[in-house]
Length: 144
Image 1 (cartoon, helix red, strand yellow):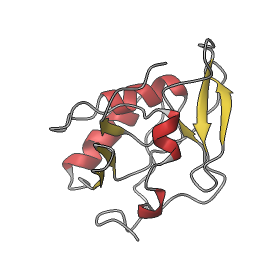
Image 2 (cartoon, rainbow, N blue to C red):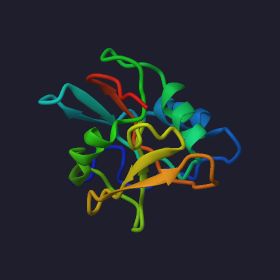
Image 3 (cartoon, helix red, strand yellow):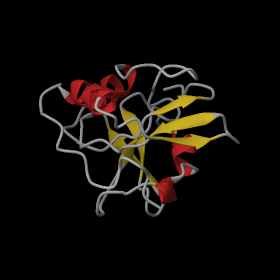
Image 4 (cartoon, rainbow, N blue to C red):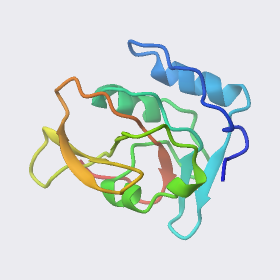
């Protein structure tokens, strides 16, 4: 199922730190599509971002206009493992999504999830890995 307003891919996000500006502009132009998960008390943003390094991924979510359910944030790996991916038009594989948390006791790694297989793997944050982002609001915040 394709969400209203998500029938086509949004235009590519501009490089070099402008991803949050792009997301705000997308929302302001009527791209306000959201996916509700009432059983978990979560609301997911209706678009998957372009590829971003981890620091920009956190900024991307944090800078979106807040919803009544709270501020946008990166989801935990557990939230990504149950995200309603069937309600998105996902980019062609391979796709990996950043999560807010990583293996216990390791601040240099974050879990990333493949939305097609739901397999998780650890990626280094400081490397130039550019992965996609799916922001969430509501529920308990993830802990790094």
